[in-house]
Image (cartoon, rainbow, N blue to C red; front, top):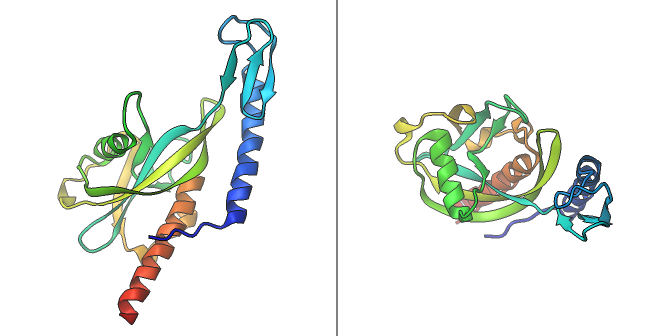
Amino acid sequence: MQILINPLRIYFLKKVGKYFLHMNFFDKFKFCPSCGSSKFVKNNDKSKRCENCGFIYYINPFAATASFLQNSDGELLVCRRANEPAKGTLDLPGGFADLGETIEECAIREIEEEIGVRPKNLRFIFSLPNEYLYSGLTVPTMDMFFEGIIENTNAIKPDDDVEECFFIPVRELNPKLFGLKSVRQAVRIFIDKSEIKEKKKYFA
């Protein structure tokens, strides 16, 4: 499968990401977490260094997942976010990886926690960088997207961070209704991929 991502969009994401990284990380972390010294200074674009004890702290992306789940009719399952950030907007089932967990295990666990069913044939398709605002700190994330099938749709029950969930035809998807930046971009990619598939079927 070929995934086409606009290089200018990726460039913009990187620039915006650096802005938020500087605005939050370098401003909020004033003291060394190792010795408590106030001589906790910028080391480079993604780390701070303590001039007192030499401790260096890097802010690296947190791993997260989101999944495109379709029913037997090819409709996509979308969720409505119950909590901030982007409360009330559309989303895909997913969340952050736990300690000691593989990214595949994370994807399955988050799906089960949020909609109460286990997907079939879940597989990784692509990843996108993102930022996530939590407790006043914008943290960088690496969002990994999966796709799979939901067979027992009657067992779906929204829970955890999901207010409601429902299936929608891919042709009716509107990326603007998805509140998180990387998910909006991923939905656009998913729509493009689906349109290519339909064209191949038509001209086959």
